[in-house]
Image (tube, rainbow, N blue to C red; front, side, top):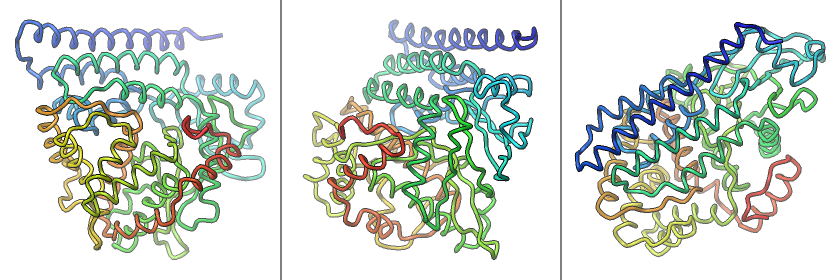
Length: 458
């Protein structure tokens, strides 16, 4: 039976979605009407109104909004700045909800399957929350439990995303976003499937088995479902706790981060699509120094066919050697079409920003200006100006999370203020990469882990 209090909470959630939808729709309608009347909307004011409308919904749409804020021209600059400040966390479920949700996933005797299970959540995010527990064999566990009715929440949020793009189309866009919309929707729906996340965790466990820099939790399939993911708890401290540590330790963490992101991409065609600070902790050696990282969250992943991986490597080599034909070939491999010379030059502003640290064979920070809030803003502004004149350009869907992840990874390096030779790290990572080997590894490892192959690899 559902209590009156719980029914009231569910009713309030539905009403909140209705209010948010109406508010976002109202902002879209006002912008559309001013455009039809030939007026120039007050974009700063409307951006604040949109952020206020979405701010009432601490859920998946916040993750989408923050993602869009990192892609040049995905939204007008005023909107990106406002949305980037919003938080994605939802309030945690109370114990009565947790108990009922756990029973729905594991049965009425679920508590007997753990030696202990903490009532208070250890962490909460946009789709679910994590509880510490202990297995009967003594192992520390993390039980990630999805909030109730999140599928409906995600579908409601995707409708708000459609409204965001309607707003975008009213403002003379510099990029065409139809592929982006489809990509974001697909990835967000995947995040609801904890069985798929368990597969990605198994995949990364195989990739980094025995690696001294990177640790991956072990999935407990007997205590996991599509809406509950139980794994071993990896002890570690927040990455931000190490920003004042000696350079040697900060560099050690940065090397681990670089390898955790670029090695799976270049050798298996998979990336961690949301490298924000909360998805990692740091483990230490016996001397109490930072030794490596724990990879904790595998909900936002993106897999790629070998052809796309080659495009990334070709673009790097084209920029490195000033080989314009190889740069153009790389863009075409990614799916950009109908590019003029002017558009190629504009896209290369952003490419040189993303690849810049890896193009210089020297020890350096990820960005000479360590202002984290301004990371990529100057380059995004130049792209914005150029595409306004020469666009629009249609962004391939594979680009969306590749770009998001690269920006997120750069932000982590900025927080650490690491000083590394990123050129040599990247060169070492891609040395000997062969598309045939990547395809073979995908078919072997993905099948064993239970992860679907990228369509173009099947």
